[in-house]
Image 1: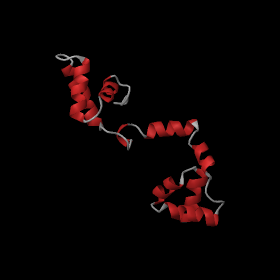
Image 2: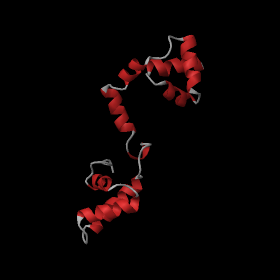
Image 3: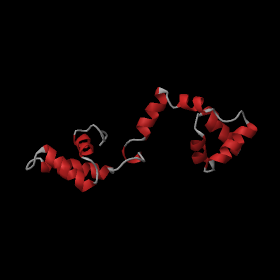
Image 4: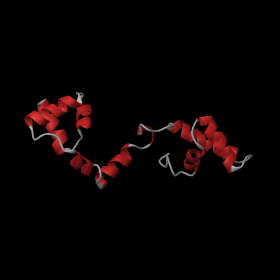
Length: 127
């Protein structure tokens, strides 16, 4: 399969974005757009691209692909989350829950509600 055919396959059949195609094939997004516009029916317009990102399949895929350490917006690692939970269990024996969360938040550089969500397993549920 040629590079142009691979671009078309990922873009039209697998419904990848131009960025995803470029990353998959290790080329620039402008090169992907150029091939699509010159040799195929072109790139999707903005509303069509938005419609692809609002389907249940896309949301499910995104929620499973962005878990824990694979989320590029995360502030903590899996090891730190485990450490927070262990330290919290020890700290609540001598401090209140709120005091323990405040201390942990300062030591890990996050806000107190983040610590609360971690220890209550609202976030990082998979660990």
